[in-house]
Length: 315
Image (tube, helix red, strand yellow):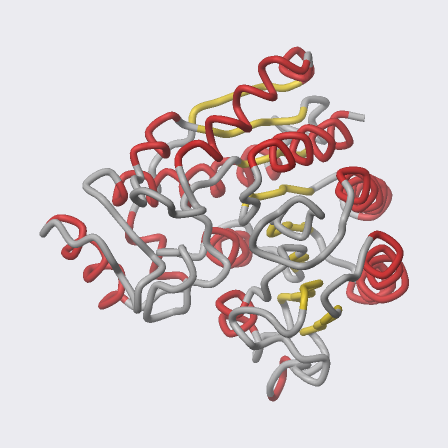
């Protein structure tokens, strides 16, 4: 059974993840998204729920136990940085990270059991840079990777796809599944740019070779280049892979107004990519599609792009 409603997952406690003055991944991002959804008229078409914290044991589907324990210990001790300098934390960060991962799992469960058709998760902190054993790039735990592993382990799916359209390559997600043929990972991203991975020849390892697809695009690329790669490469791969569920690492920092990239996407490009995936999943896998927030640092562009993408989910 396929649900008729689009879900929207958020939680105000994710704003208690305080990254300090001047940090681009700030609480105002989450607030801007929620306020835009509330003011846009979209709220009437959504079923909105509060994120629920993940059981930390579920993080072990992807992360090393040592890493999970270290993140909890460091935050409890008052640490302000988890890695080499850009993943800042505060007293509220442990709960926020559990809510980000837990809200993502709740959304996929609701889509799987037919309560929702699809969903958007306003997850914060983001996750796609987090590796198995360490935090990285604003990310403590890899929300989307945990959700993909959960779909395989809890729901018994044989093929899960992850599409990452953040301006930065999703290194943590790629590394989590690069030797696993049951998880297809595709990333459109600017290159060169942090974290320096994601070359086109990175196609997976061993039995997973061919289930990884990177589409690095040069600075200055815009709608034409990104949509061409999305339609001509990623969608064709999905047709061949035939996923039973599609997850999106939905970063909005490839927007022309974003301060961290040099890519020129319009708000409409995010609507178009979401529309194409919504159409694909409706025809191929019972509309099983969940978008999970990653980057996006210009508040106005972020809020507008999330609104545009979520409207396509509701269409």
